[in-house]
Structure formats: C-alpha cells, structure tokens
Figure 1: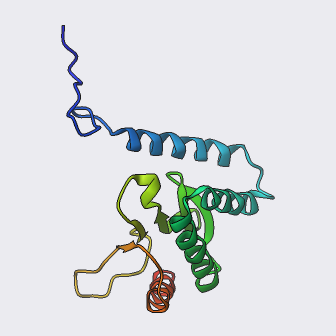
Figure 2: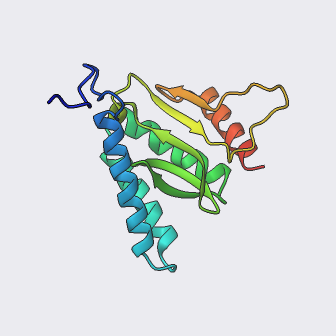
Length: 155
C-alpha cells in the first residue's frame, strides 16, 4: 500500500510542511515551553538574551543587519520586548509580536526580511499598505524608514 503523503519534489510532502516549516514549528514549541518554565522576574531579560544569542548564531551578513535592526527597534520603541518567534528575533507588546526579522540564510531565501504583524498600527486608510520588507543591507535611508515604521507601528 502506497503512502498517502508522498513527496512533491520541492521539499514538501503532499498536504504537509517543508523541512524548514517543521523546524520553525519545533523551535516555536521549544520557545513556548522555555517561556512557561521561566519565572516572572527575569523573563524579559532572558528573552532578550535569547534574541541576542540567536542573532550571534546568524551568518555574517544577516547578523550585521539583525544587530542593526535590533538596535533600531529597541531605540525607536523601547516598550517592545525582544523575544524569539519561530526561532527568529521579534519584538512584542503585551506578549503579542508587532515586528520581526527573518534571516534569509536560515530560511534558505535569497534575502532577509523585516516585517510587521496585524498588531502593528500601520493602517494608513488607503486600504493597501506593506507589512514586510526585503532587507539585503541597511543604508541610512533604509534605517530611517524602519525607524519611522516601527514608531508608527507602536503609535
């Protein structure tokens, strides 16, 4: 009898998840378990240390961008708490992720991304707005854009 879940040739199973998606889900489950095991006292500091450790593990180009984005977000919106989200750096308000960085190398994509969740206040009334941005490097102009978006997201 043949398995109903046969490979598709693109790293996914018919009706299933890719290896990268399964890895991300396992990382997220481990993050939730770790959060539940921590006491209230040092939870925020430990979560930020987890984010910084994850950034340190990244390949050099992604690490440089992630370090700079971490500095931008924590300066522009100190009320956001760094935390891991699906194994990648994210920034949350009251436990809900507002913005995040995705390493292109980790995700096996050609570029990294900085994005926002529906928790971000980015709606501009036009009915259409960007929620994710490809990031290959950070120019001064890109840093100003990210800073403005983060400030708007928490407004």
